[in-house]
Image 1: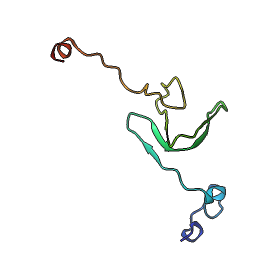
Image 2 (image 1 turned 45 degrees about the vertical axis):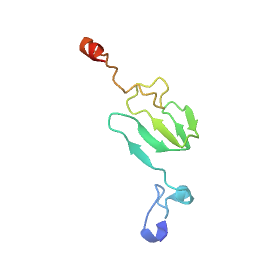
Image 3 (image 1 turned 180 degrees about the horizontal axis):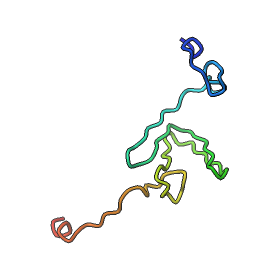
Length: 91
């Protein structure tokens, strides 16, 4: 069954999703407390017009805006926890 047969419409109202109908859909996974994982390759444009391209098979897009490499994730969302004195003595 084609997109037109299913009644799927693109953002421009055309059957089959407009110009993207011939491309496969990208899988996106939102990691709670972490990045947004997008199957690559990707071509993104930031709000200020900067273009970011990546040909990796999975791209981590920053959702917390702490990344020094924004819009790509650099794991800045992870909390830095120092070991306590009792953990040092045990390990």
